Amino acid sequence: MRLNILHGMHYRYAESVAPLPHTLVVTPRESGQTRIIHRSLRCVPDADVAWTLDVFGNLIATATFAEPTRDLVVTGEAVVDHGAPEWPVFAIDPEMDEKREDRIRALTAGFQMHLTKPVAPEELIVVIDTMVPRARGAMP
Image (cartoon, rainbow, N blue to C red):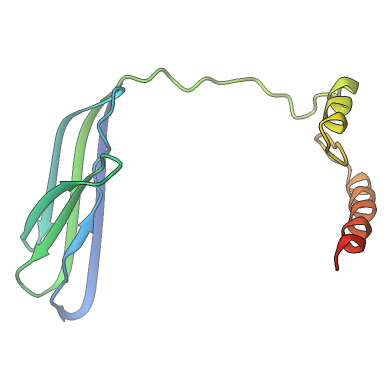
């Protein structure tokens, strides 16, 4: 799947400022599933841009601005080919009935309580009431 990514920021100041160097991460990281086809970075006012990689493989730009400005604009553009399969979609029924074996597995694993969604407020209050005194009693 081909994706066009536009990342922009615009700072407007009340008076002219001399921007300090900006560290920018405006393009995606290339990987086995993501291939960068095109990337560009535009700064207004013009900036001297130095590129480097961080320890995670992200492309980092450091933009150093030579002149004062009242408007600072940075625009990063990238075209990527994203080859990962579409995210799997699972049908989940939030009204699904609780299964007895789920409750048994949770309690056997050491959970003090087992609630299923949707949770009735009255049931939640009972659970909290039974657990809070136990926790308070354990405190020094």
